[in-house]
Length: 343
Image 1 (cartoon, rainbow, N blue to C red):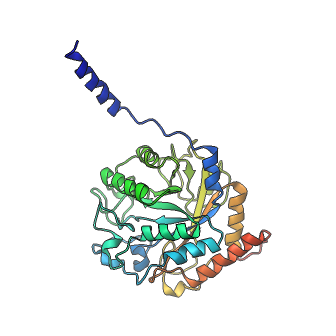
Image 2 (image 1 turned 45 degrees about the vertical axis):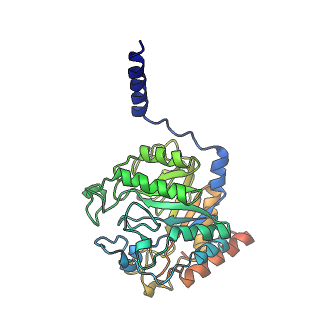
Image 3 (image 1 turned 30 degrees about the vertical axis):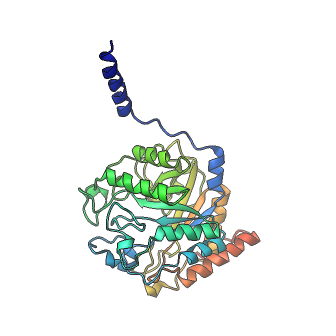
């Protein structure tokens, strides 16, 4: 009996280790309301693509490709506050694997680039100073990982490095304070860690952090993301935009939608990142943005408006002016724009 007990205990411990993790409990109504009350925020995309003029930027081997002359996170957060925004959604890593924080997982990071600053840490301090919450964008796949094809989407081959994905998420969720939600980009795959396991990891580190995927398996996600989406009720899955072709999840508690402040009519350059200097006067109107803000409020959504800092790490003058105008309209509780409002 005495010789059997240790073996039995070891077996039970082994089975417990192999057992799937229990699903995270559903978010409380109070937590859902906290996120809903943020209403809208600034989605900041700043990375290699700022300097390539392309949406996706493969082929970069030297982090010196990222070469801003400055980084004004105070301007970003101050402008968000002036616009009446509740949060900033920050791009931490795009598909090219370049990290905008001082990660210990790779040298492909901003602190090894000429800027030499932990941009996420700077942004966190600026957000705290101006009373702005923080959310994170993260490309869950990576072209630098085994199996990926540089510059191609997940259908060309998924780069798999689940341990690095987990390590990077642990850094982001333990070193930069409370994170409101994570906007996972599935364009180049899940990195070898399933969405179910990704959700479990995030919730184990920050139970209150909402998790969403712009497409791919939606089960267990508590926020429905809407890339190029529009305002709409939670049961209107088409409001999630043209990229969301996957079945909705019963676990959704909140819907988000996002699009760039730069209209589609621009010629050349990127949309989600700072484009090209010739587009510095091109911007969606304050009336259009305000109308979508009102739509978000009406349907209980949150609305993430994308802007791209320029080569100096600052928001374009036209973006700042437009967002200030939207903030004035929000504070004045301006009536909804009419059907002939500028697009």
